[in-house]
Length: 372
Image 1 (cartoon, rainbow, N blue to C red):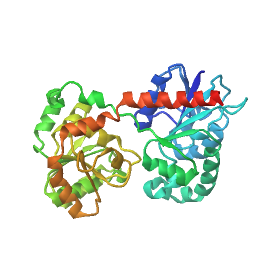
Image 2 (cartoon, rainbow, N blue to C red):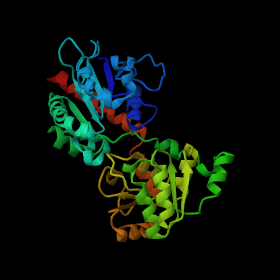
Image 3 (cartoon, one colour):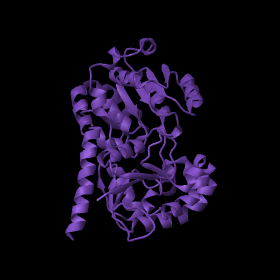
Image 4 (cartoon, one colour):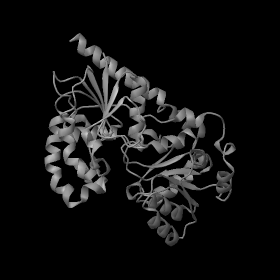
């Protein structure tokens, strides 16, 4: 029974792309349908929509009104079922012709800027606020047409229930845990340039690493350094860099920036840090799992998906970032966190575990349908 993999659009890198890559490994005979492919990989399995042949592919906001109807009119397919990766409207997908096919929908989140604009600044614009009611109506209607739904965290499962009035189970997304844990210390595998960068950093520090965008809340990492007295390392890149550098200068904390670290350097920062600090309210949060895979203790927001991977009091601490007392207590307590416990916990989110659960989910769903 051949299947069809459906995904919003394929970007150069990202958590949802890792999910689709895993789908393609689990079901190697399935083609992939997307709105457009930004990678230019030339993969013959990947088929773009008509939007991919227009300038709209470079303007997601302008393309948005055309997405629901595009997903509703996919070309006919010989596939017997659909495996959908959805963070916007991909769960609307239905090929033209024939009866509705079984749908297995992996939900990264109902579109946050439609359903949870407080968590996504794109939902706060005037245009987004005007369009949101009609989008919410059609989005809920399409979700309720049936299918097997899986959320990437319990945090998202609850959002699915609120937004769509649909039940879902949970399969956490894949993280390259075994890659991070293979081959000994990453600090012994650095290039000369990366060794130089690492040598200029303090022997212990609070680490904030992510894209430099406001919702990642890296300003809270800088604030944690000021409150606790620990030096801070901010690693990544993005448009929020000037603001973060200004905050760092004004904070009085000792803050170092590492721009666009290589994987080897990032994993070395995980290994060396006193704690990886994750203030963002994320749907899941891959980087806290990466940090645990490298043996780091994690201080994470007690609200959001990271609270489901970090074991409070064992692999790190869950805190209220508005509370200086919480931050001070957490920074002191994680000194007793067990690095081996963090590594072991991270293995539960490894790519191989994800692929096993996805295969079982789809296979059992198809078998149950045949048995009816």
